[in-house]
Length: 373
Image (tube, rainbow, N blue to C red):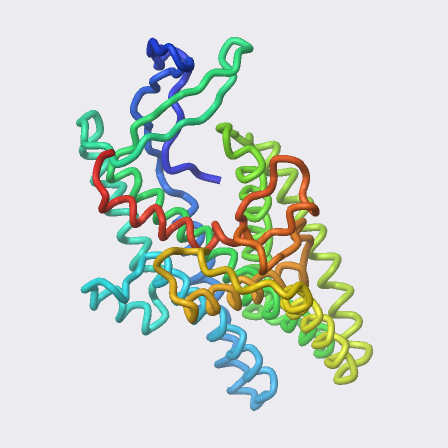
């Protein structure tokens, strides 16, 4: 996983004398190339292109049933991706007709990727020049076996690039669990009953599998960041590889069993699958209704009750999609402001993973207009 900026090494930090606490002033963060943004855009474009190609092939072969489902899964995930990026960046309140037009033609991730690349090139050209900071970031690190608190000044450009990266993380999860999972399941089902694997379908399956694995890996990364939010955690290539292999095996085994079950019972399997998804979807709402609690109205201060309801429904759909395909390790609790069942999590993990997923990008965007503290 790429990082927007790197934490300076031990030799680049200077102590600050303080009577209250020992704080080390870190050097200015060193930004890195946003590989994650490029990779997410590549997955989106690759899966969209292969899905549209298969729709064309199904239509050419008069396979209307297969064409309809393939196109429906593609359209639903693409629309949700566009809405996610618009929601995080708050484009409806801005005068950006080009961005809105690109989202309208389902090319929003492409224009966002170009914006992030332009911002990176601007930072690269201005490397070494100081710019006013918009926030201070404090994290704990271990230096010479001692726990110290390090403080960094985060500039406007780096913060903007970080906002783009966070938005693409949410987009990747939406695409993975609301689009790639049903698309992958259905294409495997079609392959099994047709007893042939065409090149176009194989490409679509590969893109969908990579997208699901990447989205599940991001869930693990976010969970680790939330659990140790007071510390700066770096996962090495070996750790990321282990998480990826685990998620790949988990998702593959579940989907293979699901496809075999569907291929055996065919249409009789639809009620069972639909019932399973609806139970996961409505379980948090049933618990919320039985608790007698009121709907939380402070998830985001700028949201109306209708906006809060839309966010809760979106979070519930995403939660159901994650649990349908892999282990989420979270229990959604709609009556709680944090939206997470606190008793179900280990110590220090009571945080807002799903809330952060939709709100963190907005809060970071709002901080850009507030100026230095």
